[in-house]
Image (tube, each protein chain N blue to C red):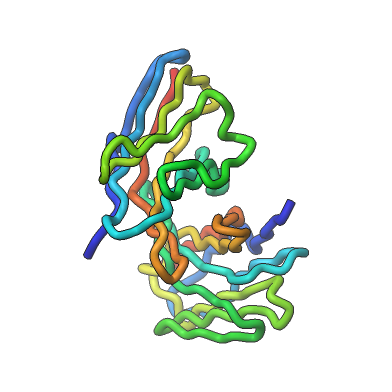
Amino acid sequence: TQLLEQSPQFLSIQEGENLTVYCNSSSVFSSLQWYRQEPGEGPVLLVTVVTGGEVKKLKRLTFQFGDARKDSSLHITAAQPGDTGLYLCAGRRGGNLIFGKGTKLSVKP
Amino acid sequence: EPEVTQTPSHQVTQMGQEVILRCVPISNHLYFYWYRQILGQKVEFLVSFYNNEISEKSEIFDDQFSVERPDGSNFTLKIRSTKLEDSAMYFCASRGYGGELFFGEGSRLTVL
């Protein structure tokens, strides 16, 4: 079974702080995706990383795919209350996506 | 912007009853999915559907579940005889050409 472990499970920080969340697996994935989910809504895609070592930036969010394509990280700079949500990583297995449990981020003003 | 729509947004049913959840995927997408998320737990894959047939299913997707694309737009998930543990958010998704999944807002199923 290919499991995606996300850490930390919960994170509560003050507005303006930086943070990093992690997604780790013992298996290699052809690509990893990061989604953000707000309560009562479906996950919304943030980014897809495909190449080992790849770094993608989306405004204040920086995503990195590990060299071995087994892990990924999401770094948020100067977090804002609007960043609050559940951040999910998902690895592609064949035609399907397997999700981690997510990191629940709360940014307090 | 095209989106995946799901109905109903919330359904309450008695144990043993049949439930049909409906989805309208993005019109030019070819792959469709159902996922579920039990409260506080992770998003779990149920089934994928391509070319009018199931392409893959998980062990959760047992004989009580079925999917159908009865016409060119709707994609349905049927649970024949609901159990308490079927209570969850059910998300439909369709897959874009870049491989990304576009999720609907979900249908919350509550089994009493």
